[in-house]
Structures are given as structure tokens and as C-alpha cells.
Amino acid sequence: MKVIVIGAGVLGVSVARHLALAGEEVLLLDQGDAGTGTTATTFAWVNSYRRLAPDYHRLGLAGMEEHARVAEQLRGVPSYFPSGALQWADSSSEQWLASNVERLQSVGYAARWVTSEEATRIAGDVRIPATITSIAHFPHEGYVLPDLFVSNLWADAEQHGAKSAIDKVVAIDDRPGGVSVTLAGGEVCTGDRVVLAAGRWTERLAAQVGIDVPMVTDFGRGSQTVGLLGYAKSPELDLHCVIHSPGLNLRPAAGGHTVLQALDLNAEVDPVDPPSADGDIAKTITQRFTALLADPSRAPEIDLRIGFRSLPVDGHTVAGYASPRSRVYCLVSHSGVTLAPILGRLVAAEIATDQEQDLLRAFRPTRFIGVRRSDIEAPQRATALGEQ
Ligand SMILES: Cc1cc2nc3c(=O)[nH]c(=O)nc-3n(C[C@H](O)[C@H](O)[C@H](O)COP(=O)(O)OP(=O)(O)OC[C@H]3O[C@@H](n4cnc5c(N)ncnc54)[C@H](O)[C@@H]3O)c2cc1C
Image (cartoon, rainbow, N blue to C red; front, side, top):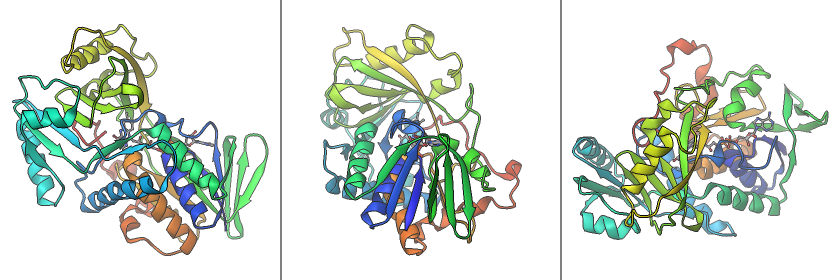
């Protein structure tokens, strides 16, 4: 079978790899280089911290487990780190943390309370402020280095025969005899199936084939899609795990760099007029970061970048054929880093074997058929941990 995968983000590359491993002929198309869409600007925390719907939590747990399996299979510089995560609360957030720990423990998620001394040993090179009143440890969570992860997945896919091309897809034709995809350069590629994994661009492409994948398509100030990240180049830190502190989330990046996220500031970020290096938002992030440094004497150097979430309108993953007769398989998720390994394996299995995978049943795009957009409860802007 020949499968054309549109979109070389973390989801498309993961599916392409599994299809290639299954012996299918794969052509991966992207308008740019692999991993340069939303996957290039992500916090990349691997977790199932706040998936309140049981089906979604099950998928999240499977995603966490699958990361470990994939890491054993991939060559190249390690890109997945099962580091665990720490969450620190102060007097204003300790109740919220306690209720989350209780809820997670009740569903068997690894979560435990730790002392400040133990947290310092787990965390590495940061200072826990005196205002912190409780700390929870989530030992099975982790993070990935997204660019390395995508390149490791793709290297393996290529080794198993997958091919790629850089060009923009301008049309998709879904017919009983097969699918065809037209590229901006004029070339037409034909295949047996298409996987539409075009991230935040999916709704528009799907609409061309009469498929409704309703997504949040507002990318302006105040939209739930807008997510700011800080990339701290200095001081270099020996951070050992993901840390969620009041006002600032941190995860290690390559070379002692740190990725920073302050969810409450997203509402003020205007993509048309991005925050400047010396503006209020940059100053706030710098202050919050400095407060966590063991040696606060050196002024941090932080680059700000805006990411845009790929967000189905009901907040849940979309995975499935648009209809029983369609040959176009839609795949979108706003938790794409956590879920890429498991979605890659299950989606490839559904395409290659035509066997429905139980974990994906709740996520079909057909759930939107006949439903008015105004009747769908849209996700709020991510302000709480686990919603990013
Ligand atoms: C600020 C922020 C923080 C996040 N934090 C986390 C987190 O902690 N944990 C987590 O699991 N997830 C997180 N996410 C979400 C996660 O990053 C995304 O779900 C994931 O990266 C989406 O991957 P993708 O492959 O679907 O999309 P993308 O990476 O956007 O890839 C889609 C690709 O499709 C291509 N494309 C689009 N249209 C066309 C076309 N017409 N022709 C050819 N190519 C096309 C694009 O060029 C792009 O490369 C976060 C996201 C943001 C923005």
C-alpha cells in the first residue's frame, strides 16, 4: 500500500515511521523542513496530568509508556528523558495541588509528596523559594527534546524506506480508486491512503475534501492557541527534571539551556506585535526565573518565541477516517508530543491492517458530523498546569 503523509511534525513523522516499519510505501510531504511547525515551539512535557476524560487519560498513559519503548528502538542522540516532574505549590496553590495529587493517585497515576530536601536532590541546579509550602513528585513523567526526537524518528523511517519531499499540498482528491495530492509545484502524487497530519493547518486542508475537522483557528491575541515560551541560554543549568513552580514551568533543553513557560502571561501575548526582549513580559519571565536560580547574580539571557497550538475545537485528539468510505485519515492533537509514539503506532496499525484500535475509538473525526460548532464546548485558554 502507498500512503502519503501530509505534515512532518511530530505526529506525521511518527506515523510515517510506523508505516515504514510495517513495510508500507511511505511518502512524507511538508511545505518546510521536518519539525518546523508547532513541534518547534513546544514545552514537550510527557504527561497525563490533567486528562479528566477517562478515554483521554488512558491514551495519555499509553503515550507515556510508548515513549520508553520507542526510545529503546531509536538510534541517535537520546531525545526522550523519563526524568519525572516536580510541582511546587505556595499557599495560594497548595489546595489545587493537593486535589490533583489525590485525583491522580485515585486513578493509579504515580504521584507522591516529597520534602524540600528530597525535591532539591531530584531537581538539580535550582533554588526552592521559602514561600513553597508543598511539593509533589510525578516520577513517571518526562520530556523530549523535540528537534532531536523528530530527527531520530525520521532517520529510522528513512532507514525503513520512507521517502519525503518538500512542497506545499494545495489539493487532495479522495476517490474510491485511490487518493491524489496536488503540490504547489504542480506535481500530482497518487496513493492508496492519505494521512492528514498538518497540525493547525488541518481544518483548511480537510475542508477541501469535504471533511470537517473543526479546530480553533484564531491565532490572535487572547486566543487559546497562543503559547509563549522562553529559551534561556544562560545561565546554563544542570536541571534534572521538569519543574512546575508557581508562575513558571521549566524543562531542561540541550547544552544546559532551559525552556520556560508562564501560562498566565499568554493572554497578553500578541503575535502581531510579539513581546520584545526588553518589554514587560520579558522582564516578568526573567524575574521569575532569577528567583529560582541558586546563583541569581548572573542576568539570564532569554529568547522569547510564540507557539501556536494545534487545537481541535473540543480539545480532544482527532484520529480516524473521515467516513467509512474515505481514504483520508485525519490526525490532530494538542498533546502531540506526549501522544506521538502511541498515535504513530496505532494509526499505522489501523491503516495497514484495517483493524480498529480500541484506544482510538473515542477520538474519531465522525464525532463532529451533524454537530453545530456552537454546541461544542471549546477548551478555555490554558492557565492551569496540564492544559498546555
Ligand atoms: C506553547 C506550547 C506548549 C506545548 N506543550 C506541550 C507539552 O508540554 N506536551 C505535549 O504533549 N504537547 C505540548 N504542546 C502541543 C504539541 O507541541 C503539539 O500537539 C504538536 O507539536 C503538534 O504536532 P503536529 O505534528 O500535529 O503539528 P506540526 O508540528 O505543526 O506539524 C504539522 C506540519 O504540517 C505541515 N503542513 C501544514 N500545511 C501543509 C501543507 N498544505 N502542505 C504541506 N505541509 C503542510 C507544516 O509545515 C508542519 O510542519 C504544546 C504546544 C504549544 C504551542
